[in-house]
Length: 616
Image (cartoon, rainbow, N blue to C red; front, side, top):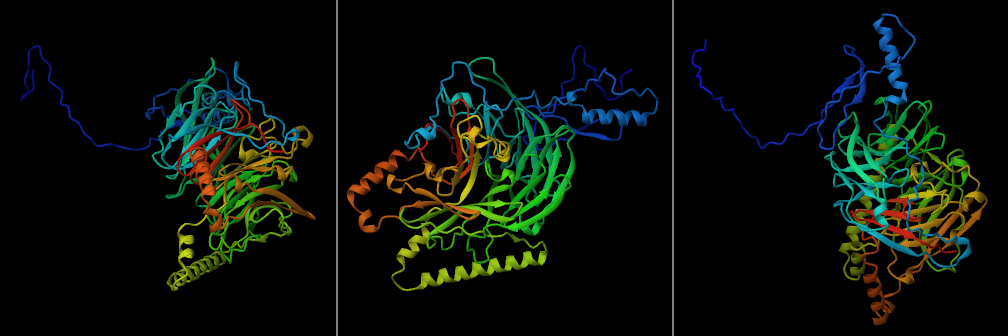
């Protein structure tokens, strides 16, 4: 019997009510799967995202194999045994893909470029610009290469992570990436490749961390790429906190991702269970963590901060062992120096020497003849054992004497941090008052004002990568694990290590750690007259490595038409070749050719270089 008020239409259906809305809804779904139906404990694993951002339903298949010999009826014991089995069984953790071997794959029919040994030649470095990648629109913040060098990823402030195929750098060079990952919706601060997999971890400044798998198969001359798959997600606890650097390594029972944040937290995250087995809190008065490195055996962690403090942690017990200030060889007038990066020395110190890139003072830098670039610290003895500096002068000028400086322990009390902040503010105020007074002086100060408005680029090292043998099989491909080969004999590796640095003056320098005189500037020279010379001096257990840049010619000589014409021609020739902004990230690749360098700058440009010959 029909209801009252309803209308019955013979042979027709009621038209559905359809409406539309132009509002966009943005959110994050975190639906955790259960260990068993009815179990109150979550497994800790987030449901993976598809490439389109939609979480597809995926049912977990029940295992037909018995997980234990227990045949009782107690549900508590059954839940406990199943939880232990799921946490420790690797066979059920197939989200990260198959194991990938370390080292590049030599493709069939690939064009082989030989790298001539440095000891048998006196030629200069022949650097070729292979590709100029311009897909990013903001600053490049991080670069990372896959274990087999099949692809590399780049993170940028334009909120995207791009995947680049290294095979495209040999034939049919293209400037387009194979994939673009844009599910962060915030600026990317760092990327990291998961050890032994085709997965990368990316962290943004909204506190999110994504683990993404790159589906790639090598079936022909060129690899084929599938869709990107998000296999894990994580978000830091505190609002406004985000990850600044990451390191990943595999252990027997876990896949550990070490995260360092702006709130001075060091978090070890197990990617298999998405649980946090360990968390360490660095003293917040030391400033936000800017860099991090670990040793070969993963027993200790060193973090550097924006206030110029290095802190050594025992990873096994979560104990803070010591903290000390860097930049002791720089006269900073009480101002703290920023630590840009720290890595373990590739050849010296048996894994106990740490190379630290420190910030140089900006005020009065033109009056300083020597600028400190990198300090090498013995973390066991807490002494400065080696320094890398740059200066302006001639080759005949004597080298500065190296001085052995002991570490100055950092005060962990908040009162000391407040006092240091007050001193820094006072120094800044005094410098500002002196500058304003100089501007008000009548006459004869136009040149000083122009110098202040157009300062010379600082030689601060912003990024570096180290290894044992550049372009060979013993090169350490990941700057976080540059100490993996420290136990190899120097005779086998063919040298005593190398270091490639990218600095604020837009230069890429190749440092030969065995013979400093063979160091060369690969990119960034404005003229041949600016080519520097390199030397070293040792005194006791301390050594200093000096880059000597020729002085800038005076205005009378620089105004000559012939010299000005040659300078303009040289600049036009190298305008598109060199970086035009601060170099922010570096990486070495060994496929499809040996001796490859990838560099990214603050303007968003990525350049791929091939080094064929190094100066002997």
